[in-house]
Image: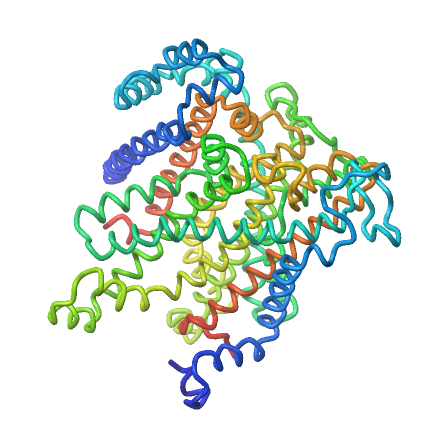
Length: 316
Length: 291
């Protein structure tokens, strides 16, 4: 019962965030310098063309009315139509989203599976060669432009050794293993930053727990190092891990923009770039809106997991 | 405060202490040395390069030789010259983005933290909202709206940075505003702007300095990504990210051209990160190195 009330309360808190996000997304078109209709129409448009576009997009109406119309449509699942193809934005986004989500989720899993053991290992073997190696890898992973790493992967692993397909994507609904095979290299590319971030954060969190007063008390009570680490350390570090996973997921979703370009994957990330270049503003707004909703949902899930793991957080 | 005990209270002053710090930590010496070299290369680029970075020739995709130490690209331009001319672009981009982030984020964060109440509540929600946007996605969208080009792209990245900076300075401001000296200044009738400038900012700024240094690396990587995607530096002007995009398209003929700009980006971002981490351990007394 308490849990249900808590979920209800968190859901309520999400409402203003979503609303503010829609304001920010709507404001994107207001940021266009000069007359958006003229910008959309292009260099060689006549005054009639511009007027037609202005009327078609409702840019001649008051700003608040434009926003209300857009918001009303958005809640009914209508994110208006693409200026280039004329197709409904939502359909286009949902058609490409699975490719992006597959990459982001796979990258997150790789980051956790590699980063968590690496971080814990570095913390328990603190100030040894192993720790220094782990921290160096983490520093490199944060600093490297990961789309460049993707290019090197393509040059060596795909073209050189032929282990992976170079580009493209296969829908996961059609061919599960084929989809994974295509997604493996781009996901690994995306995961480098996540692995680095999780390793760093987990290492310092674990060092803090292991050198804390209660860890010393447990040691004095006669508990073995291993049981302090696995029973107490891991539980306390899991809260840091949750927070970091939220951040990493957000970053990973953003980084798909460049990675999808490198691997020629028809996803939401590559679509927002082409839409931004061709000034297809409804499309840009639609993609940003859907991605923000995904991040907000992910944050909500993390919030609730946090409460389950840490009873102190529920009391607030 | 242990610093003052460890190093005797000499009469060196701030500049002396800074120089002492730079040379006492090898990591700082290397990072700052590299960045200083980058600045010098940027200023003297015309003297250092044998060719113009945008001059085309018939010698396309030449392997490295004496005249072209890094070969030529698909339009016969000297790759070495283009890498050198990419340095000022990268530095300009990084500092512009961080500058915009500071100009937008600092005042908002300080005011929210200092004033509290409903202002703080509204600003905090706004910060939370903006932080749920995946960074690069928002930067791409804003660049599309403002118009494509390096300056607009980096203003967009700055806008993406601003909620991070606002959030950080807000927390610091809340901590500092409850200090006794701020109360004292207020009872003496000091005006709010003066309290903020004289007392709050100088005492709240340290974590921001660290964060901003680390953000220079993030901005550099963002510039590389955006220029790679064609949203940043426009042809024919060179940028490391854009050179990667070109190099990638003829990777099978001239693979070496894919590596040099990437290494330049990696080293520069390592230098910014190294400097940021060193500043963190220098400025944060709770994170002294163990042992």
